Amino acid sequence: METMPEDLDVVLPPYDGIKLSNVRMVKTAADAAAALAAMSSADVLGFDTESKPTFQKGEVSTGPHLVQLATDDIAYLFQIGAVPGDIETSVLKAVLESPSILKVGFGLLDDIKRLRSKMGIETSNVIDLSTAMRHREKNPLGAKTAVARHFGQALQKSKRITTTNWAMPRLSEKQILYAADDAHVALKLYRHWRAAQAAK
Image (cartoon, rainbow, N blue to C red; front, side):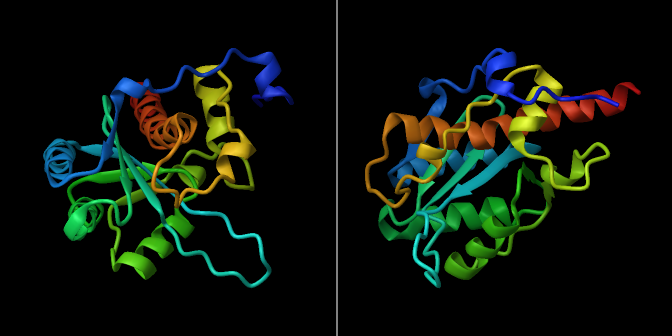
């Protein structure tokens, strides 16, 4: 049985994530149209969301505040409410509800619930890799473990970035890259996993 090193960050070389030049912040109607055109021609998209964390007991999340979708080459980041006329909602609805475009990501249960609750999006044709890619584990597989196992690299998952305010109108470069990587690495892992399955 395959064993994993306990401290992945020390033992393994770092995962070389997506470059900032390959990330598109969808801020205008033209950005949204370009993103829709690119994503509509994809067979599979990496998918994730980010929400402002809740710290108080009983506090209800108002997320998602950011939705990330990635093709093989580009990650598109949608800040909810950033595009005039609620255009990003119509684009996200078209893509996420499409039965012909597969969406893949890790731990998507809450993401899907929040999209339905906040935006009325009924996501379809989704594979949650945290369960689909499990190998003898009882618990869901995380992206960090999957990257270590399939790529032999350490995915950097900073808790400091994870718990930042994703509702801010202007995200930092670190937030942007963190969020883009979440979607993009899911797609890369899916491609690798399916290729390995096909080769058996």
